[in-house]
Length: 123
Image (cartoon, helix red, strand yellow):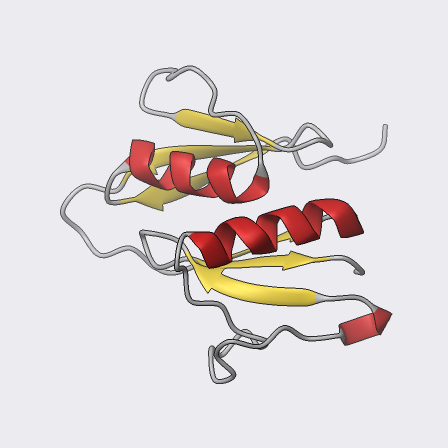
């Protein structure tokens, strides 16, 4: 049987805020709360289950989303309209730029919990 990633847990200060933020940027739906999780499901069926982290520190993680050109444009527009800072690099040293890695386009931004999110058009 082929191995597939099914879901991952994304720790947040406010799971609803973080789930709605990412879903809004990517043009996805926020699923119904299930137990301690609020899910956001991508087109390939992978679910990001947002969960409150409690009072402890959140270790920032990196999540990358491969988008077709038109969806990249739409997500990029939503980020700009919302005033979200974006960067061409994962170290957040090139603000206000996108990259053209592998002949595509990509950018990085932070979610409300401080996770580094990436959207790209070429893997």
